[in-house]
Figure (cartoon, rainbow over the protein chains, first blue to last red):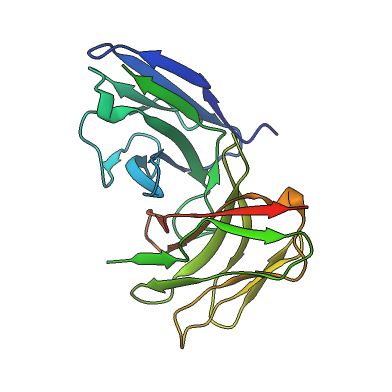
Length: 114
Length: 112
């Protein structure tokens, strides 16, 4: 069981470039999440997907898009990267609302936008 | 809305010292409470959790008790080790709510 995996681990972009962060889970979880972590601010929710085929905005969705490709995979896209998007990005998953509410996290992607 | 307030860091202790990291919360209803730990360069790992009042979560020598009367979930360990050096996050979610609300994290450093 790999749990939650993320690729890439590190990425450097120039302002205006685009990229997609990949996330996959092998725990048959229904819900998946994208967070960003910035110093002194804890983790903030960008987008989430409560089930395959649905996505919803979190606290800080501006500048991002997501795709729930199937039950296992949930990607985060930056269409035109900005320096303010320099952060560490974490994907998480959980079984689903109404059952165990524990979220399990991936190892993170450290993104720098120059 | 929900919020979590945790002890400002950084916290530096000597090996074998007693640890307390304070966490208080504001939430509607009966939230589930969590402590996550982040070791250097890694993602967040669930350390322990409690889902109802007076529950005690425990793992790896760490404990936290869900106190509804004081809206607190303080993390404790009787004798810390150098390997406990990490950032600790308190978090909560409500039944039926997709969102996990985090505190800002407390950086703990243990010196030999």
